[in-house]
Length: 260
Image (cartoon, rainbow, N blue to C red):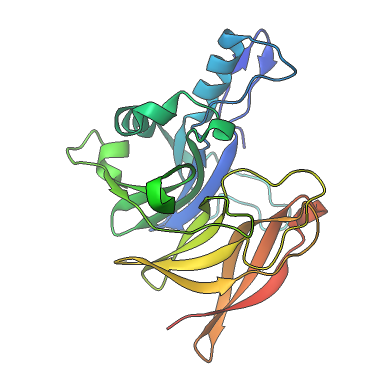
């Protein structure tokens, strides 16, 4: 299903979708809302601006019952799709010093989304603020999709550092049993060939503050934890699938996360 038609010089651009959530019958898909770095030394501001604009979109999607052929997986009717550009404006207003910088310079990049009790939570991989505090933006859904009144709030979980002392941001975000779960990892990926070690990536619960639940193992060079999918619970632990950036198909790996 096509979400955007943005292009530059006749070439289609990507949404750079970094997060998905489901709540109350709706799917939510969020772009990275970040600025790409200059590639190969080429300084083409117009192209960079176009790519940033394409990624600065949020979608709410609802499929009517029976609109998907369960045998083929194909759509039999078009879903209800609503686009929002409001989050981009909120980010520019609240994170002005970082909004125009690429991730490599501690700039804005959204990498997780969750929805709970009428609010959308956008988890930012960058920037990370002083005292190793990451940013989660909490915004009323009515502000994003219905032109409603309300304010965006910054949650600032302290997610610590990886084994090399590098600040960690949000790499995935979800709601489980009414609480936010955060997959935390370094803002910038390690140099090529540097192994990922125990505790470079960590799962937190976030309420009044960030509570560490599990330091993740190192799963190999350049195999970076990317997403967390709970599939059940037993004996006070969440059974979940951990997906990775790098291996084909995301290399889903079963883990257990202590959860009280």
